[in-house]
Image (tube, rainbow, N blue to C red; front, side, top):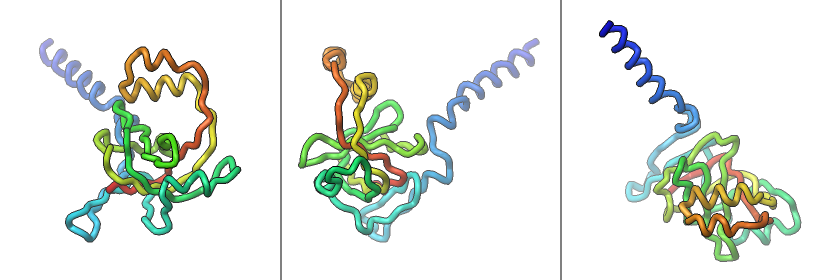
Length: 170
């Protein structure tokens, strides 16, 4: 009887610890970390492997977009906020306006929760979208905003967003 209880307990523990593995951690081939040649600065790679060449500052993005609804581009900027639940979105500092919200293609990889203050180089698609009230409230909740701030969200927001398929984090 004790052996049966022990086996059942172990199985439950393994299931509980491994049940969300696909949602919590990116696939081994989608997350690659490697130091750069400069020993003082290291870079981590997330999603598709990309290079830094031809990346433009996030402050130039709106002007480059013009009246386009979406545009493939590589941008760079400082991370100001990261989802504290999973790292499933981040915001990039934008001197030209509101922070740029960045999500990750097909929910395929996440950023470290402590990435705020670091520089990101991202390749992907810039888009003008209307973010729903429900999504805005969820982002506010993920960011740790208080209930009053979340309840104050009453209308959708048209904004420039970015879906990254690859990120270099420095």
